[in-house]
Image 1 (cartoon, helix red, strand yellow):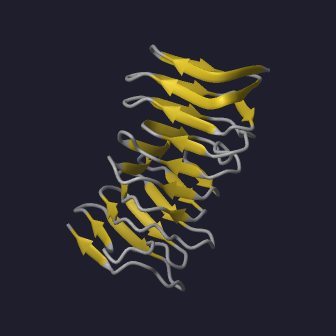
Image 2 (cartoon, helix red, strand yellow):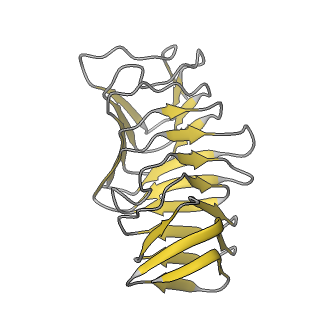
Length: 212
């Protein structure tokens, strides 16, 4: 295995495969603008993982075992394994636009998700014909936008308490748990061509849906 306090990827598309990478120090992975870093290797450590770098993409393909949170401060964070975020929370805390993305046919994330801060934008994206299931609680003050062409499902048993507005800008959002739409009195905005679908048997939070 390999141990690194910080990882920096500066050019092209870099793929890391085989073995285990143990993060120490601040646990930062910095990816330069226009660059894609793909980690097929599993990631361990006790300091969590923080992605830095706007206009870039970090792809996590393995079942990771690091403790602490997985934080995205800028750019695209692609989770293509159900255990990619390990067991901590996924913190979306944008200094620049951030995106939580999956490109697999079906990815199910059991992690809690924290929508932190109030600046820039937070998007959740499933690619066309793909499904991303969010089973954990979604909390925090930041607005949330669903902008991929695929399907995002809010499921599990933990209540969503996020206070920002929900916008379904593209694709389909399926809600299948109590208070799936969070605690906002603003409600949800559904753009033309997008879909918000409700499963029966639940009480949904929010103040209703508005078509845009």
